[in-house]
Image (cartoon, rainbow, N blue to C red; front, side):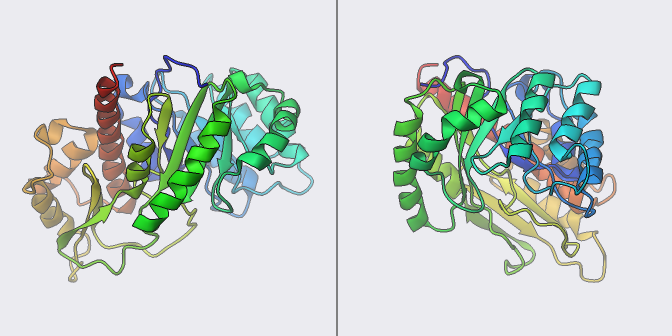
Length: 351
């Protein structure tokens, strides 16, 4: 069984980009201590070592005190001829700055990646995240059973020092929830045979593209990732999601029109405002519409840093922002909303 009494209640899988990192930077310490993000390092330059350094430099300055974090470098290639790879580069940088991280392991990691993960764990607190499933396939408990002991041995870790993440990636329909629930329950039966530090069930449900949604109106998108967790909801299962992003790692795209992805109880409200030749100034009207909506929290601007930024734009204060800023505002609200929801759920279990 997973260890009890773990302070972490939420393990979001976040892209290691400006918007998500800015949201993390503005988390209150008390809330940050209950979150352990898994940062997926994005490939942006074609040079994996450069991308690793870039991520580390940005992330080091935003990590709240008391927050643990894991780093997944699976999207960065191993550089030819280099004596160290991207994961080792990130671990070295964070160790120099005395910021602890955990490497993320996968069953299909190469010998080189596992050796780097071993070094990374030894440089920090010795703990790791083992992530099963993801963008290629769902978690497979039979495959994990065969490979787990060898994975831990090669990475120089133990199950007791490992947080398990069962990653079901993208839930695209209501029908898909039932399929994933059955698979998740099988995986949980297997996982509970071992003394994991924690067990997380993670998935995403945000559409890959929002371009077909209407302008100048709020559109609800079901949070099927949350629906899955509620079906599985048990006191020893940590909740994981992909924040307000689609699980896929997108490298580049066109600058979007003013938009916000705003988390509510069972849905995300997607706000898209037309540019109409005014650049990003539509964000002011967008924010005014949001703060007048029923799903605007009773605490208003005090709910989170992101809500404070939205309230300012609704009052025509400050610039309209850009895509990274809008992602930061929405992510800050989302992280706060999820932790509050999980705390209420924990109280329901008598915790």
